[in-house]
Image (cartoon, rainbow, N blue to C red; front, side, top):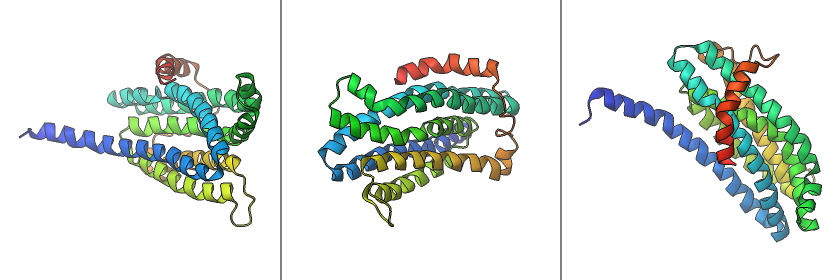
Length: 251
């Protein structure tokens, strides 16, 4: 039988790992739901959805990989008992989300033209362009969610991330149904509706974690959401140095 300290370590590790695994599975399920629901729109829409989502999430993964530097930075700060440094890393993770996300949000406005340049069929490029033109508005929020997630997990609070992701799954299903097929008097937007639905999910999940930082007395004490008026170059550089290899690996 393992001794008590070892059992305690195992329990603590599982207590952190299980919500992280659950959150990851929930996020993956959103892509599954999108494919199943888009499949009802026809093969052209499904092909464009795969092209559009591959483009969007490849770019997202590279940026999220860079922002993933928040997690070990926060963990190291907490291990050293430096709560201010942990909050500082989280704040600069949000700045990094803005600095990476805004240019790519703008660039995705010309997605159709870019896809045509690399030889995609005009019909597929047009549909994928509509999808990317909608989902791009969630790009910054998707990266901000990664920064918040890095902070929550870095301080050992993974359950709020799981809760936010589960909420996102529910919003994804409902919004897809309403925006893709046209419900409650709204027009059927088809594949473009899937993009708007995904953007709404990203906003909702990010807002959930931001609200948690305001509502929980323990989390509020970190003051993560204060001092956001200007970036901190030294911390930003430290995050970039650590995160770029991660982003390149994921890419």
